[in-house]
Image 1 (spheres, rainbow, N blue to C red):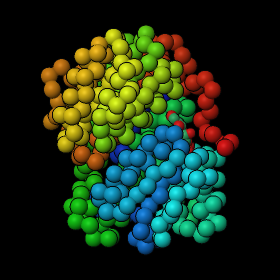
Image 2: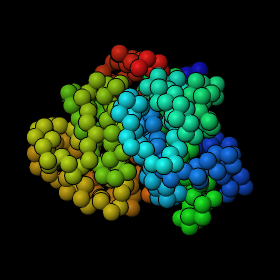
Image 3: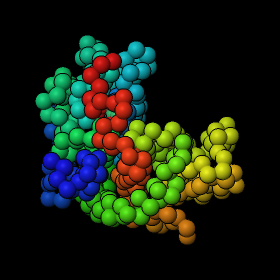
Length: 359
Ligand code: F6R
């Protein structure tokens, strides 16, 4: 029930810190050991490459998952859009392991890939919010998101739950394969810090609504820019804004802007920069200057240790691999308030259904 909330989307954004804590209690023992079925870990251990297959927001969660699996578990990982993968399958490695990310567990594009993967007899894992879904029944293994029902069409808490489960799984896998980085990674405390940082962001609702009013209430287009993990978040942030507010929004690798797309920047174009990736922060700052020089209205979302004076949204510091869990929250709120302020039905954007069961 949405109770006092005008829309489910806002309720589900608000629930995210609690979902992080629930995942810790479901998956972590004694604040330390990640409990994942040995069968899953053994099958993943035997693989030489992970293939994450998903659609939409779940695909975007997969992009962050690649960073987690490669960094903590040291296993090469590819991420693919389901509707492309099934019909244009890349050359596979010798021992592939497939991960299907799907909130609903019913997405037809993802299922058609799983059917082929099963025909080829490769092992697979579905990570889903829906225990009895088609994708969880048909995959070799399943893990649950424990996010509770997600009603709003625009996915919010399922995205962050997917990233958190990927982090837990990467920690568990890297630990059993003896990766020092995974063994040393204190995922319990890092995700607890994330839950607190998320709470700090949801508590900023009013000032984020003010930014939405000032920068996004009239515009026809907008950009999110970032590098590395912040680029992954930029694409998801752009999808959120476009699907609920109908503002044409692109998520862009900030270094690529000058190779063509900067032609679209004119006086008043909103550009939201996400800056949590320390090695590239100064480069993205440079790109912000470039768009400012062409008249853009910039909003900067930065992490505290990388923040500059004038940044409108500052996130508490969290582990560098987990910043998407926090930086996406103000972007979700910007999307929510832009839709609300324009008078749309936030939970049911036009042309969209909650689960896409046709290819
Ligand atoms: C966007 C959104 C969609 C879904 C996509 C996959 O907010 O909700 O892009 O993420 O249709 O759905 P699932 O995760 O159910 O497979």
